Amino acid sequence: CVCDEGYVRNESNECIEEENCDKCSEPNEEYTNCKRTCPPELCISIIALFNCKADEPCEAGCACKPGHYRQQNNTSCIPACQCQEMEGTTECRATIEQ
Image (cartoon, rainbow, N blue to C red; front, side, top):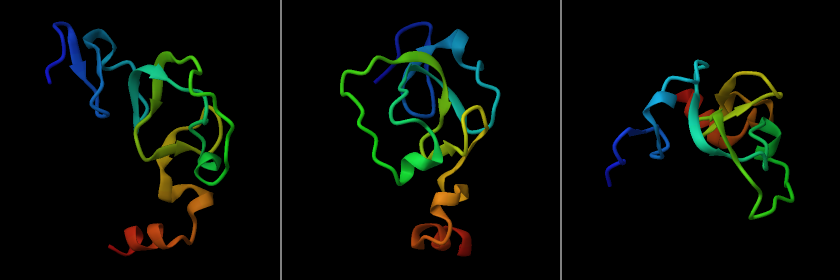
């Protein structure tokens, strides 16, 4: 697949307008045409269940890259294994030991 003229692929393989490519300056963030607010991109969403609607509206903006979350609103995106909620899990211990 190729993006239309004037569009480029972000790291999530989504076509975004070329002018939006460098809008997100924080590490582990990328611009998306459809940023969902539910579930929130917070570490707590790794373990908590949220009652999200399938047709919930989305908006363009900066979002955490896949596998990254924010510890709190308006903080930097961090890898899931750096979230307190993942501390001591088998998945994260294996990643740290490598």
